[in-house]
Image (cartoon, rainbow, N blue to C red; front, side):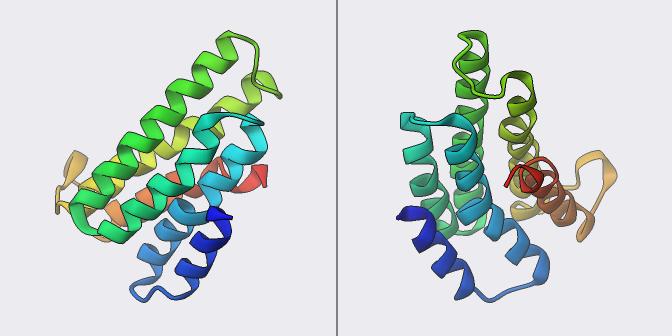
Amino acid sequence: MLIALGALAWCLTTGSTVDSLVLLSVLVLVPLAARVLLGPSPVREVLPLLGGLGAAFGGASGSYLWLAATVGLAFYAAASLRADRLGASLASLPPLCFPVVGALWWVAARNAYAPLGFHEPIVSLTAAHFHHAAVTPQL
């Protein structure tokens, strides 16, 4: 239900194409991938809520909230892999960990940082890339 609301909210967003791509990942793709790859878990239920709150807050504060959510997702996925609870084993780990890198670049974009000397629009494009690169092929 929350993913469907995220999809509706994404349809109503306005902004640059790159921002729309990142928001599509935050509101729809990453929560959907977590639902597909994790099976029943509390993380997959909380992730769409945190993504929606991150998008609603916008700016730097929303990106930090999303960063915290993706770090939690990555730790849960790694713990599940170690406990052999993750369905597709090692192949499921990158799609659940790459969004952390995307979230870090999204934080940099929202705070006008220039990591590794890169400036906009490269920073936002990198955020979109890392959100989509591992997640989209899984869906």
